[in-house]
Picture 1 (cartoon, rainbow, N blue to C red):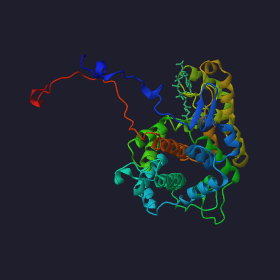
Picture 2: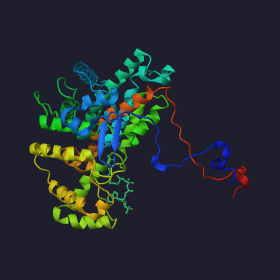
Picture 3: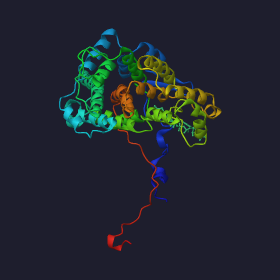
Picture 4: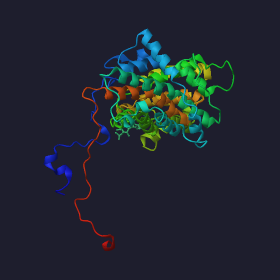
Length: 414
Ligand code: ACO
């Protein structure tokens, strides 16, 4: 119809790009991905993920992502101690977690908990203060921003552990001091009253590597959601809650759980060929393979595969490992997958590690969301401090509904 908006030459060109397949919404210096070559680097065309996984830690890499450079020794010490200092949550949070049903999904609890947390910190809430609180030119505003960053990273593990303990029907544990970020996280989940309890250093390190690998991945759905939400100048807790909600969806944070369910359904290596035939007939999907950006192996998958071996030395081999290896080895040689450039992604092996460590399957997305907090914050901080200030993200649509028509009074309608 003539009066449809997109046909109005006065309104200029409008591009239709469902799912943002080809739309860049920001200039970013945080993460670089070359999907054709299977390359992932953090901070500009900077540090290769393989080097960081080998030598860095999740918190050091978090600092790099957020502030743009590796910290000095003193900066790292301060950052770690601020994050750990802020790991304790208000005692009322116990009542909040206790208000959930006994079988509430941990991601539902974590998502709500981030928003709940925001209700405590009015100094981070521009709606209450009536202005953008975070500007580059003002040191006090930067210090305020840093504080929210420490809090969100520090409390993420505590909130996640509380969600875990609610599901287990256990009392909550105060975050311990003197442990690493993943050490205190494991402690808060696994502590059952033994005074000198310490998590296994191998599992603590493996989880730290997994956290680092999940710290950021450019403008995926959840990072985009954080920015879209944050662009209204809402407080960072609400923006992170929105990102967490986006990650909760099975197309984003749920694939490693799908891998485990797939491996269980295959059952044993001799059933792999029949399963692959079913995939080729499109009756099944090979979970943990394929990626929108990577058209070769996801570089993180190699590191996770190695980490899995370290973990199995402590936990014993997962009984699904043989099937996973048979499936992996057959698929990477199979023409169907090779011709479509479908290779293992980050989720193919990570679920096996989490399963071996004893995490329930519905906790897997939480283990993705907690480390991703640093990436979300890096994107949020970059946007808030960008030259020219923040512009609200308000995409346009192409209207395809009815043309103008006149209202018909109810009594005259059929
Ligand atoms: N198993 C079987 N076939 C597949 C798979 C798969 N895992 N992935 C893609 N294909 C096929 C498609 O059917 C299509 O075949 P066709 O050309 O004959 O029609 C072809 O490969 C191209 O795939 P697309 O669907 O166009 O790829 P897209 O980029 O849209 O999807 C996605 C990427 C969603 C990751 C997809 O590969 C998939 O569903 N993989 C399994 C789920 C998974 O592991 N997700 C985790 C991704 S990583 C992350 O989010 C952290």
